[in-house]
Image (cartoon, rainbow, N blue to C red; front, side, top):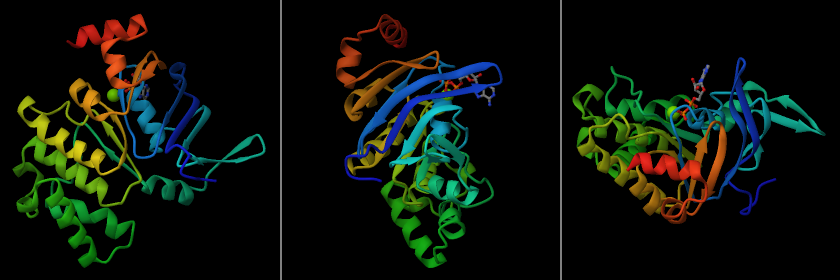
Amino acid sequence: MTSVETPMVRADRVCKSFGAVKVLKGISLEVGRGQVTCLIGPSGSGKSTFLRCINHLERVDAGRLYVDGDLVGYVERGSKLYELHPRAAAKQRRDIGMVFQHFNLFPHRTVLENVIEAPILVKKLKRDEAVEKARDLLARVGLADKVDAYPAQLSGGQQQRVAIARALAMDPKLMLFDEPTSALDPELVGEVLAVMRDLADGGMTMVVVTHEMGFAREVADQLVFMDGGVVVEAGDPRQVLADPKESRTREFLSRLL
Ligand code: ADP
Ligand code: MG
């Protein structure tokens, strides 16, 4: 059952281990519709793993993870969980866009071909429609003149904007960003953050792992600090940044400056 009140993401004591290593130790958080949540925390704290669980790239071991009211990867009958049929899982996943630190574009395809691929293959869009939509999206991320370029001919910032357009071409209801600017030269960070801010202003629900505190302060509705596989502190970004409640948050933030 979904309604406007259902959060877009709800994690309830989500746990994930790799072998004997517990990486997520009971993550609970909510991301409201149209809201931006920034996830911060030291390397190894489980941020990527959490995003990957949302996007079906990892399987949750315990706890419940919901996107748009639907349990991710499982169906619940009574108190028991059953794995979703792969087709149903793929359908869930289709509605979630993800952008990685390393843009993962197809190197031997043009920008336009990169963007139209999934809509044609997965959404069964007609090529003409997919092309028209891709051109619109590429214009929106400021790359109208690069449709026929190959990824290697673009700067890192331009490639990342293509990756964002490619994710948007699937009409996601949720966008996940895993350190989208960490691999970029400093002078290229701003153009990618500007595109993300524009998306947020347009009402997209976003979960963003980032160390760009200016972006978090100005764009995020919620800032979540993770450490050691738990949420240490979460709240209004301005409040958390200006006056962290937990000493671990304070220490982490002081090391960033
Ligand atoms: P973060 O994104 O916060 O840096 P990660 O979620 O990438 O943290 O990793 C958290 C921990 O989980 C790390 O110790 C990492 O080595 C471990 N880990 C992540 N993915 C795997 C995997 N596929 N197999 C084994 N260990 C993993
Ligand atoms: Mg990571």
